[in-house]
Each structure stands twice: as structure tokens, then as C-alpha cells.
Length: 476
Image 1: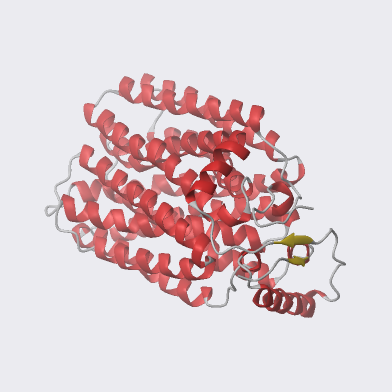
Image 2 (image 1 turned 90 degrees about the vertical axis):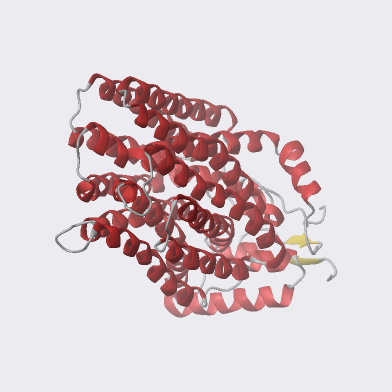
């Protein structure tokens, strides 16, 4: 391992003006969320057709369980690939994880029974879970500090761009006048596979994170990459702004042990760890409980045919996409703490009112969809901010693992339980039972809002190294 050295690489990256290079990073890496949104929406929109498939013959509970299998795979993938990302680098892993996703989602279209469908969904989730840790860390380390919040929320929000693609695809592929629904739902999973092939091509142009190289003693390589980025940006934008900030001294290391990760999380940054757990778990429960099972609610309680579900998913998805895009700028200007508290709190209050209205039968299918669209306009920004928070909270050397741990915990507690619980409640056929599920989700969002107000911290406009000191940074 190389000897200690002094560097200003983080400051050089943070002072760069926004350029085509940053757009390439956002598009090539941010497409992860498009793929996840596509997957979730396809299964949500196709739930009725999958349940009615003469080969699969799934009950409502089994549909919920397959959603949980996808999320369990995401937990496994996040932890395993997150650990590898901090050891082997961002670039290697965000190539491997998209390959896992590509193969598994295509295989899903060839499922022949409940178990094969659940297993393929598990491995599809593993690829997506690995993407979250590898890609989130890479994006945050390449984007200038002053735009990190806006960019991170917008990128996470593109989940709903994928959701819109999934909803639109289902309208065509489930139309019996166009194609046999039994074949249509199988072909739908090929949409994600086709999209991920283009992702592989785009990602070959994304460099390894200079910040990761820096802490692993590969100083010359990090310097070369930052120099190339500066030349690229200067050619487009002209002379670059001066570098501001004191250089930091790095004592390189080959890896960070799991014991050191645990000590850092639960001793050095205990408040941030608690905050991350609450934000991730609460939003995961609400999102996955509602979204994975909404198609079942529409078919069971409103009599909407399976082929028409996409029409209801599409406005829901567009509202979710609009939230982070419209509100994201305020997380960098007004600040993280106020905006995260407000978006979680508004989503919780509105969800409670909507759950009660659903139980009373006051809402038509379109009115119910309109209500969810407004609620998740705010909830989408809140959920995206949860990923931003856990990415910023901890030192560089364990960033991917930190993201993976909180994503995994939040998904396991909130996401796996939610779809299974709501699937069982829907199968019971009582609106009142489902209302209590919605009220539970609302209460969790309000708990998250209170936790953010109490434990939230200011990270807007600050370099990652000043928000959380690198473990390899030598003492001043």
C-alpha cells in the first residue's frame, strides 16, 4: 500500500461547473432506478394477468410473496455487492450487477410455476440491490457538492420514469386485441432486459471514482482521471474556477473491516445510523405496501380489468416522477432537514385521510388514483432524500456498504413485510382491514418526519469529506 500523501482531488471535483460529463454520469448510472421502476411497475400492472395465468395460477397472497422474494433478493444483492463495491471499486460492480439483472429479468419471462417465478424475481432483485449501493456511491462521489442534493433526488426519482414505461408497456402487452395476455406478460419482462443492454454500453465511458482510488493508494490513477475530467469540462465551459479548500492528507488502506464499519455506524455516527434506519424502513413499507398491491386493489374492489391497470399506474408514476424533479432543488437551498421533515410529514397526513376515505367507499378508482398521485408526489421526494441521507452520512471507505446496510434493513423491515401483509389483507376482501394497513403506513411516515427533525443534519453544499471525515484521512 502506498505511503500517506496530500491531495486536493475532492475540491477539484466539487468546483467543476455542470457539464456533459455530469449528464453522462447521471444518465449511464441513474438508469438503475429506471430499471427498478420498470420492474416494480411491470409486476404491479401485470399482477392481475400473472394471477390469472393458466401456467402459474397464483393467489393474491402468492402475488404478494413474489414481491417479497424480489425485495429479499434486493437485500441480499445490496449487502453482498455493497461489500464488494467498497473493496473492488465502483466501476467493476456497476457492470456486474446490471449483468445479473439482465439475465434474471429475461429468465422471469420463462417462469412455469410459483417457485420458478419467485426464484427469478429473487435474482432480479439481487441485481437491482447491488446497483443501489454501487451506483449511489459512484454518483455522489462524481457530482459537485452544490448540486448533489438536486441530482441525487432527480436520479432516484427516475424510478418513476421506469414506472411510466412499465405502465405504458403493460397497456400494449396486455391488450388481448394485440397479443395473448399469457404471452404478453412474459414478453413484458424482456423490456427491462433490452434496456439494460444499452446501459452496459453507456457505462464503459464512466471512470472509476477518483475518491475511491485516492483512499486505496492509487493516487496516480486518480490524478489522471480527474485531469481528464477537467480537460473535458474546460473544453466545453472554458477556464475552470479556482480550487477552494485545504488539501487533505490520506493514509491509504486496502479495505475496511466489518468490525470497523460497525464501530463507525453505531459508535461514531449513532444518531445518523438511527436516522437512516427510520427513514429507509418507513418509506420502504409505505411504497412497497401500496405500490406492489395497488393493481390487486383496483381489480378486487373497483372491478378494473387487468388489461386496463396501466392507465391507473401511469398518472401515479408521473406524479411520483414530478416530486423529486420539482422539489429537489429546495433540498440544496432551503436545506435537507426542513425539506425531509416536510415531505415525510405531508405524505403521512394525506395517506391517513385517503385510507379512511377508501374504507368509507367515498372514492372511485380514478379518485383513489388521484389521491395516491398527490400523496406520492411528496413521498417520492422524501424516499429519494432517504437514499441521499444515508449516502452522505458516513465515510468514503464504507459508503457503498453503508448504503447497502440501510437499504437492506429498510427493505427487509418495510418492504418485505408490506407487500405480504397487504396481499393477505386484500385477499380477506374487507376495506376496513386495508384501511388499518394504510393508517400504519401513515403513522410510519410521521415517525420518520419527527426523527428527521430531531436528528437531521446539514449537508447541503458541503463536500462529502467535510460531512463525514474519511477513515483514511490522517490527523491534522
